[in-house]
Amino acid sequence: MDVQRIYNDPDASIADMIKVVETDPMIVTNLLKAANSPLYFMGKDINRVSVAVSLFGMSMTRSIVLNSAIRKLLKVDMNPYDITPEKFAEISNLQASLMMSWYKRIDKEKADKLYLAAFLQETGKILISNQIVLEHLEENFKSEITMAINIAMVEKSFTGVTTSEVTAAIFEHWKFDKEFVEIILHVDDYNKAPEEIKEYATALNIIKTIVAVHEPLSERAIDAGLFKAKAAGYDVEILEEEINKLVDTMRA
Image (cartoon, rainbow, N blue to C red):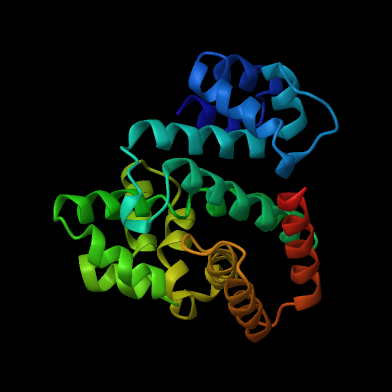
């Protein structure tokens, strides 16, 4: 809440953000880990919060802090999706990173908004996963997920809801702004999104497809994402370039 308050205050400074971030050791750890990740390569070792926050800026710092806070608040057991909590966190980072590198070549202002949404859009999977575990359906769910082209359909068949629906409900409960909640809500069914948010929901779905939880950056996932991007009228070459850069970074 403090980070949100500072981010929304036009008179707040980077120094104000640093003071808040420094109060939470876990968030400090995650922020420094992100700063030294190949995804955000900054050309030197970052070992001070002040340097990391200054380099990331207010928007990206806010996104990383909120992502860290959510992981602390919710019990993360991703076994039904056949991944570890660490892999789930990595996928969130990959989705956010690809979104930022892609969309800043399209519209920098929209990129900032989409970065946070990409970072947090899979949050609902945590609660869906916990429900699957409680109902002892892990193996059946995992088997369906492994073969699925559309994970949302599998989630719907087992729980009656999709990740985007659950994620939107979480952020509505936590009093995120209405537009953000609406964008998240329509990610899994972006073609039915209201016109004013359709671009955002579509972009998030494309990224979610390319960096799919069960096969991130696989050939099948990339082809499916590029197909959706082309159908939506995007310049596919730009997205393909950014995907290749990300893949090269992961291999380095």
